[in-house]
Length: 81
Image (tube, rainbow, N blue to C red):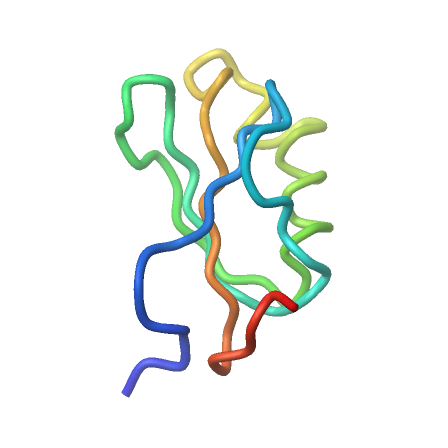
């Protein structure tokens, strides 16, 4: 049984600021490169903190993923409101 909310993940592009910024809540996330390929999948207890970690010295700061998106879903079926 999945602990994640059903449906498609929210998307955030840290380069352009477009999309839905993740909340400081537990969840699952994926990093896609500019070509749309998933390059990393992870879980965290704080999605926003993990996004910033990847932007500053992590997976979103390397050339392979620059310009990519951070896709996320909340754990426990919580909503974003």
